Length: 73
Image: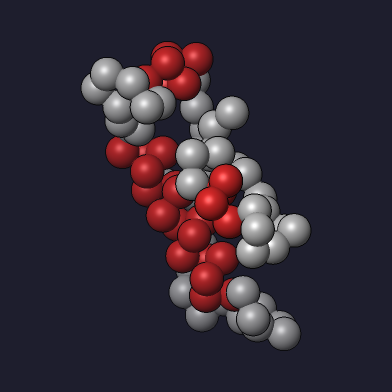
């Protein structure tokens, strides 16, 4: 399972453990995860960082205001 490497360490802390990776992976990408020459495409990496940035910025916002423009890379 992808995105399970670290989550197993948090299972005793909470019931809300979400296992996902906000990237679009091709079959070739999945072969490289935790393998030889592990990597993501730069565009996928940027999308992942963009996702987590917006998640953290808006995590406790009652009303989400988009001061900074959001766009697909």
